[in-house]
Image 1 (spheres, rainbow, N blue to C red):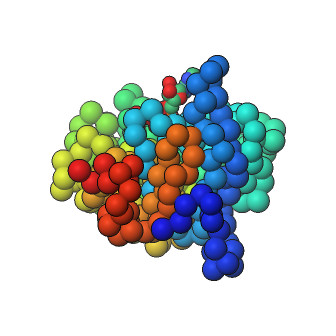
Image 2: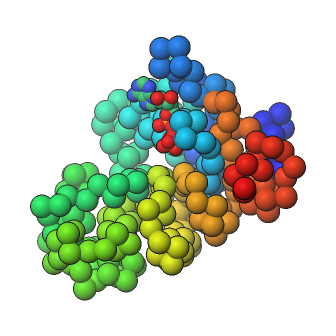
Amino acid sequence: MKTEKHFITADEKTETPVIIIDHLYKKFGKNVVLKDFSLTVKKEENVVVLGKSGSGKSVLIKCIIGLLKPDSGRIEVFGKNTPELDHDELDKIRAKIGFLFQGNALYDSMTVRENLEFPLRRHWIDFSQKEVDALVIEALENVNLAHTVDMMPEELSGGMLKRVALARTMILKPDVILYDEPTTGLDPVTAREIDSLILKLQKKYHTSSIIITHDMNCVKNTADRVALLLDGKCYAQGKYEEFEQSADKNIKQFFE
Ligand SMILES: Nc1ncnc2c1ncn2[C@@H]1O[C@H](COP(=O)(O)OP(=O)(O)OP(=O)(O)O)[C@@H](O)[C@H]1O
């Protein structure tokens, strides 16, 4: 396992980084949430960010997609420092980043089809109706829910809603997906289905992901690498097995 003291090994440097978070600081008043946080996510890699409630995981994600401006530090996504980008440039980057919200963020008054069409229209990409229809069906087939295309969200179970939300996240075939607690509130069987979908989509579309979760089964199933956010820093990072076997008390508490 690596600590922040020896972050990037020679071996890692040879692989393409998609996201580089470098010495990031973010505070709200006197509350310093991110304090010299650094993390790199490589192509086709799933990195799980573990951290206690209130440790700053959501703040980190919001900084990555430009919803919050860090006080200092760099966040390079596809080679661009996102905190420095103007609105239009940020919008272009965001079109390549999918975000799966914890609460799914589907529109209750829209059908599944309309919910899935939404990102296609929002990012001002000129698709014909035929292309839109094909993308909607492809996205739903990826999550085995093509039959729900004309249903309303209220007709779907919690697990189905999560899968529809994932289909919507994937519809623009993003290079990066940020998952905020993807399995929280789901029963164990449905949660494991979501884990499998995360892996399936990673392989099919070669996506890189940051996954925020407290669900250690989700960590075990999806993480290529785990990073622990503690006291505003990347306290430790390594393979799931290294975390599981660690004697460090700050790490052990996630397995109790
Ligand atoms: N917009 C904001 N203004 C002021 N403080 C904020 C804001 N957003 C987050 N914070 C503070 O930043 C800290 C980290 O919050 P954050 O939501 O990132 O935690 P988290 O690790 O995602 O927690 P959880 O696992 O409970 O979702 C908290 O102390 C929170 O109060």
